[in-house]
Image (cartoon, rainbow over all chains, first blue to last red):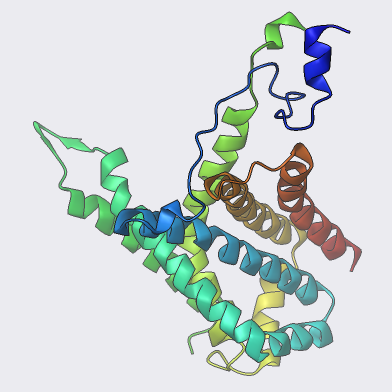
Length: 148
Length: 119
């Protein structure tokens, strides 16, 4: 038996079936490293937001199907949204969607640089433009469903 | 297939992630507030009144396809981040977990649209 064959049957080696024969070194880190500083906590919160928002997208897809299954299915879906557990998840999803959007808007001036003549457009205008687009989408949805 | 050696599909996956992220920041705060809270608690009228207007647009199969694709991109974005967050937590899950997480992002909008067409 060759040396590499001996290695391949050992279970503590990383799975190289898809990564080739690279074996990246994984520096041991504490499981709670992201609680160490404020910046890391904000980062972790932002990453966590994707899980909650993703669950709400699944909920919206169920809503989309319910619209097509008729008014009874739609009533069922709307009633489901009023269930206390769903309401709590929705409130968390709303907070997380806002965290995700606002932190992204803050970062956009780092990526989008608009030159006017010899100067760049000020960061605040780039950020503001994103809030305007968000407000426009809100307006479109409200006009679609009907002004409350 | 020598020309594919050392290549990765990450740029393709990442572009879908980027598109979904861009869509998510402009739409999700509004969609969560409107369909998660305002519609269920009657800010836009009774469920039947809202149904009239919502079904009017979404009843069109092309509109439903556009919504499925849009929500699919956002879901892809969320699943991509969820998978990479596992690495942040010090977990290095096997390929089957990766396939499962991205599989949800691919299958959920596809199955939803199939159900839309079937109903």
